[in-house]
Image 1 (cartoon, rainbow, N blue to C red):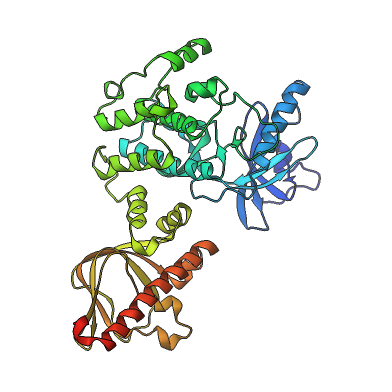
Image 2 (cartoon, rainbow, N blue to C red):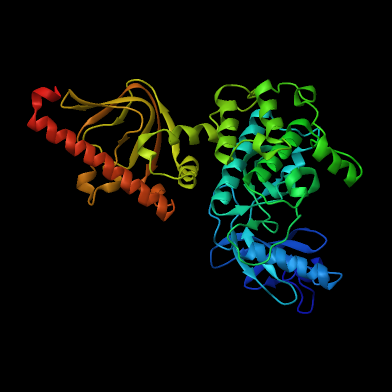
Length: 452
């Protein structure tokens, strides 16, 4: 590409883009609204792309509107570095510039879920339920941080795409968040009308069930291609939210089971006490629809993330892991299945991986003698990670599959990519495993007949 002439305008000048916003190099514009613009930029320090939401210089018509958006900016700025969940967009930085304050956020390539609310672009039911499960886990995490989102809608849920397939989802836009622990004045009666609960419309005190209602309204829209309540006038929509029952989902889409419809309609109940009691109850009810084959899979024939998450949650090895750490394992681990007779390890081989057995059994052989049988929830090969020297990483036994197994595995290198907290939890789990094995070895030596 030829160099620009000395006095020729730069590409940024031609496109109307700023060269820099603070320390971030602007790459392109992602979108704009009435009061803000969103840019794709480069964080050279972190060596990653970020999204920057900057207030437009001419955004506010009057001082009252200006004060409102100052509250919105302050709500999001208060969350810098605080939200660390695989399904929540990270807020990296907030700069309270006098003219144009801006937020720096994790960049999520893809689109919002608005794209999949149209009747001609609906997602498979299993995928919608999976999205609901991940959003419920993310919003549950936020609620445990003392936060109620208050504006859960398709435009605030980012879809991570592989072609047209949604492979993940992230909750974003925290300007309407109600912080239960904040001592500053907060805004009431915010949100998007089509997805607001009756108590939110009333300006009543809220708990997590307001967001549960909103997520249920989003799932209804994704399933049916229309929101649960719809009219041309706001007053008419409000009247429906207070008094009407949403049209039955089974009459709007084929394949909707009675149980799926009951869960969504129940979460849209006028009385909050008639909705699921908390996020965990709603998430597990959604996951149960997949586990019990209550939704047709369509093209989704593989194991879903929700199934993997719930599988790990039941294993003794992961007993000390929280939801965030388990999600990290789901996304970072290598999931593998091995048939009967396969050798996970051979004596004398150098270890480079370790496995946690999620189902099935393996047998441990030393010099042709079976010395142990290990099942779900047990780790094997952990010395590859724990051994202080290469000599100790040589396997001292053959480990063979006795009953087809599924494992999650890590190398020492891939384990180092996990967060520090998750690595500490792995260390604690390995210590528990080693203590149990040392105890078993001691018992075998002290009471060989009783052990045999």
